Length: 297
Picture 1 (tube, helix red, strand yellow):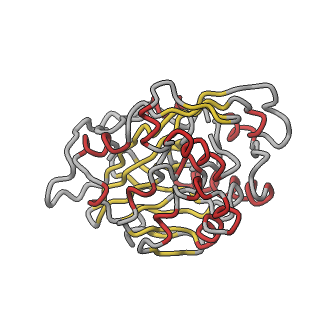
Picture 2: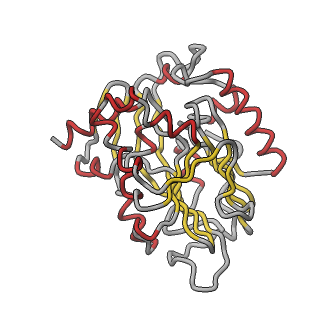
């Protein structure tokens, strides 16, 4: 029954995922390997990266509206992140459901083969955090591979673009009852809605940046780290590094022109700040990151 529910959950959204890089250098030399949470009085801002699953894109053609990827496949990462700030913790995206970890071989459904080698819960535990400790939860968007463990964070304050919240709780989404179960716990959560960019902690260090087009309220995240410098997490603005290089838009995006405008804005921000760009579905980018319990600061 659990497997059936998981398979049905993949109908929640049309899709999502990615691969190679020029903007993701090797981890900064000062990126520490400590596992402990910030000690009392420690004002460091830290970014922890988690391996939240694998996605075999069996029909990569879905990810190009111009046919550029027809006949190809791709193996993608599914990363999610914890940002630790003196004023609280922010969980960004929630990956694939931890329940998939029970099936070592993964599950194939339509154009995807998905698996979860390591649970998010165990990775948080290794950092010394339980979901109940996390003050804020936000998502780049509401596709299944970004909200798989959203229910863990229903006790956090849900930070969400108002257009995305309307999209994730629309009648069409509710009609897929088993898929909708992934996000349903967030409907009654304490929620802060916003339009445009949102300054999470009020000091400019962690900014949720409006990047609509993949979905109506899609967002990216910009984190200004003291030692590693600014980092920009793409969400699903790009699925492959090649998509970024060639400005390729998935066929299932809600608005292609809006997506291209968001790409322009994203690249301008990245160039202006000299940010390190992480394509969240890129295995190559994941390999350049210190994975939790290590972190960037």
